[in-house]
Amino acid sequence: MEIWLLNHLPTPALALIMVGGIVFLALAGSLLTYRWHPGLAEGEHNDMVGAGLGMFAAIYGIILAFVVVTLWTEVDEAEAVVANESTYLAQMVRDSQAFPAPQRARMEDAVSAYAHALVEVQWPLMREGRPEYGATEGAIGDMFAALNSFEPRTEREKAFYRETISDINKIVAERRARITKAQQSLPVLFKVLAYGGALVIIPLTFLYGNKSRRVRLLFVGSVAALVGFSLLLVLVLDHPFAGDISVTPDAFKEGALAKFW
Image (cartoon, rainbow, N blue to C red):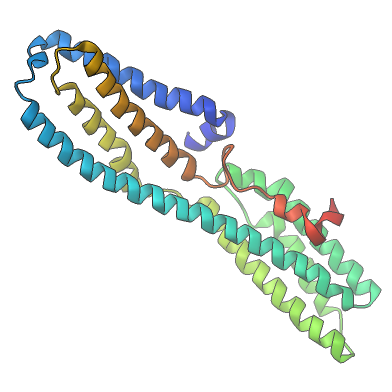
């Protein structure tokens, strides 16, 4: 459901729905609470409510901060993996220039097939959270086959041959890391703490008394908006390959790889 929302709704629309919905429900809940318990406006329990709200807010803030920092780190790592994979692929194209024309052409054909399979087949699957190795497996096999069919003769060819083998092995490793990143998600326990914590913090603000309705609603709405934006950030960062704010495959269309597009 989360991935579907990210892929089918722009981020501003998600913000309007999520943050706006939380604020609306919070304001409605506050109005209903004061209608059913008008005595709360006197603020007789403000000391107790304030202490409880401060304690829960501190704990919840630490949890949210930990979750957001963890997810942001995951996004940075996903971007680094994609950058490394595209760099090794481009480097392999450059290294293969030292090979004879038939082997060089065969290697470039395999690289082109890999890049197109990754961008056109595997990437859409990653956006949906269900990547598979099969999309690029054939191209990887063609790369190894091209090298296995070539026997370097000169020292120059041998040096670039070793570098090309190293590049392919690194590509395979980064591909596995990328697919793993695309399948990862925030553990259920952290989701319960992040989303469930909002169900504790926001209702507590209903109990804080003030005779001015405007001040009460401003207080409740501000807390709800802050919580809503925090949860929106958690939702967006939890899936680094889905939604508007996501890792893109543009790196596989640049530099030495641009000629394949």
